[in-house]
Length: 166
Image 1 (cartoon, one colour):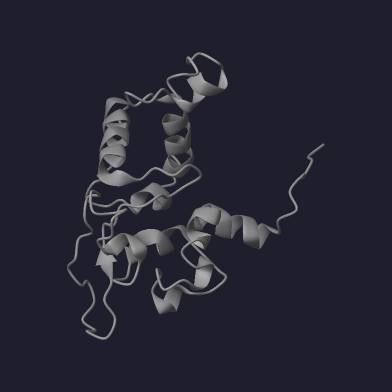
Image 2: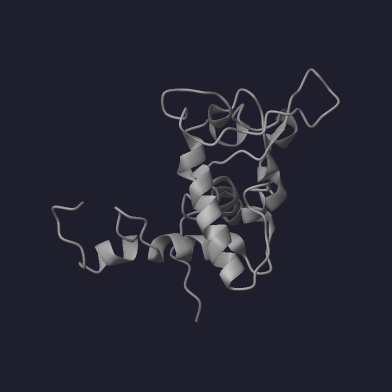
């Protein structure tokens, strides 16, 4: 017997998965200026996370983002009225794998397991690549992997971390 304890519709659940849920609702949700106007709809696909626009929070330097690896600022369109940037590092997937060093560490883990993907050059593949499903794999990896000085989330949940460290 399959139980569905969610109150979300399938469309809303898909939206949360592909757009990072409440994390991107901070950006304005599916109609945020973070996304190209052609993608501001209620039907999302994994490839929709491929680009960002200059008005997007993660494509502009702010006190919060100035230490992030910058977006590739080359306009990939021939239309000067709408710029699209490729290779922006921001949280994608069920857990928020963000910053280029997280993408790089996860890419290294994948390479050690004979999964060839260049997430530093094409971070959108975290959502697009489904064989294996990198979004879910990254969530498990991020949950289980300590990043000193931070312990893994799993170790915190299991009580393996002294409370004064957190």
